[in-house]
Length: 291
Ligand SMILES: CC(C)(COP(=O)(O)OP(=O)(O)OC[C@H]1O[C@@H](n2cnc3c(N)ncnc32)[C@H](O)[C@@H]1OP(=O)(O)O)[C@@H](O)C(=O)NCCC(=O)NCCS
Image 1 (cartoon, rainbow, N blue to C red):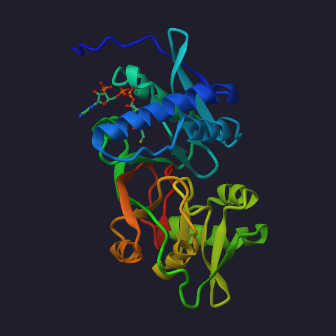
Image 2: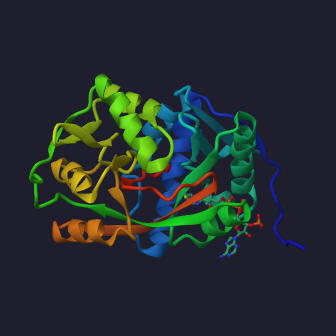
Image 3: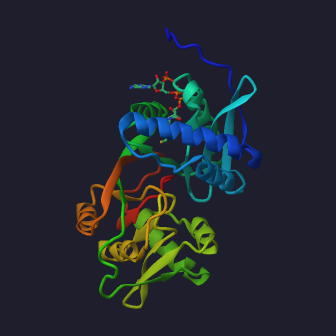
């Protein structure tokens, strides 16, 4: 029998008005986690976390929930519903209320929603050094798919021969969707369209064709390319990587070695996990912190 006294928890839909309090909780939760393990915090401050949650809470492509206990908000979670695969996170629980079952309820709420909208699968990215989140997600049915290395810095190489990187435009969507379908088995066109509107997306052309794209070279962006060469050109073109860094699949040794040879530093290990449909990608890719 558990000795834990589980708090009464109500889960409800998040609104934009919840973002300040949830941003504070998100920052404190990640600060405590990273400080305990000697890693840098994923967020520079509560305002940055609140800004991201405010965007997610008000985006109709996301389903977001908060947990309340005793009339106070104690945590939140988000489900990205913009593609055939649903992405989960960021999930955070107030450090004073952790390990009491709130996180499990927040996960179950978005997984229940996904069962109704029936995506082909669900994915998330987990801090590999965090025993609790690994245990929670594994017991909820998530499988480990890919070890990731979050890397940060400014690449020494600024160009890759024969590859031209330029901002993405709306007219690139079809080619990028076709590439995503070939590499991953599904499209992420809505996310790319959002990123084109936000002016963070780029494409690489080689031999007169689009051979890769990135929604952003950032923690919250993803990228897909035909080959490591194309991916290297996208990475090389970035002035800086947003947030803690970009997520390089560690088993892509050639790409990770290229990143290290170009002066990038490993910040933290992370793990991609999934439930449902998963294809081993047939190309070069960087997941976002969602998937
Ligand atoms: C991760 C997080 C959201 C989980 O929420 P929580 O309310 O603390 O988690 P819960 O109490 O609901 O569930 C934790 C489960 O892991 C289990 N667990 C914890 N540590 C464990 C360990 N070392 N080995 C095995 N199981 C463990 C607990 O027993 C519990 O399982 P149970 O429900 O079967 O008892 C929360 O801890 C948090 O905000 N952490 C900091 C931010 C973070 O890491 N977010 C996730 C990013 S991927």
